[in-house]
Structure formats: structure tokens, C-alpha cells
Length: 60
Image (cartoon, rainbow, N blue to C red; front, top):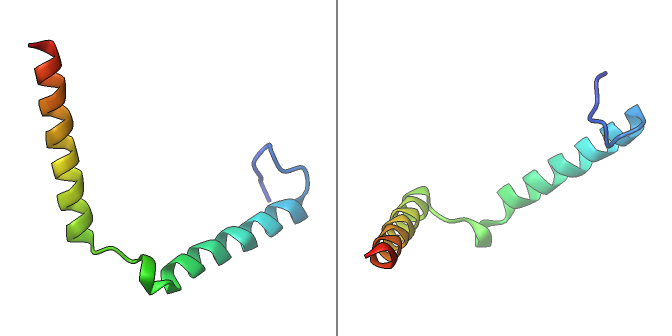
């Protein structure tokens, strides 16, 4: 089994993998933290537009 350099043993890799999978599952199971994809995309488009406008105003 190949592992990342920050892990020195296979058991460390396996422990990290179990931890990571548990974190992902907990996030998937937490409905309070769920944000609709369309809302995220709309928020990001707004943020990009605001940032572009701010940068254009700085260079003017």
C-alpha cells in the first residue's frame, strides 16, 4: 500500500482514512449544514461579480 509521506506506517494511513471517511459521512448526515447547489452557485456568481467590480473601480 502506497501512502503519503506524512504517514510513516500503514496503520497511520488506515487510521487517517477511517477518520476522513467518518468526517465526510458526518457532513453528509448533517442536514443543518446542507446548502442547495443552486444557492451556492448564485452566491459564488455574486461574489465574483462584486470582486470584479471592486477591482475595476480600483484600477479606474
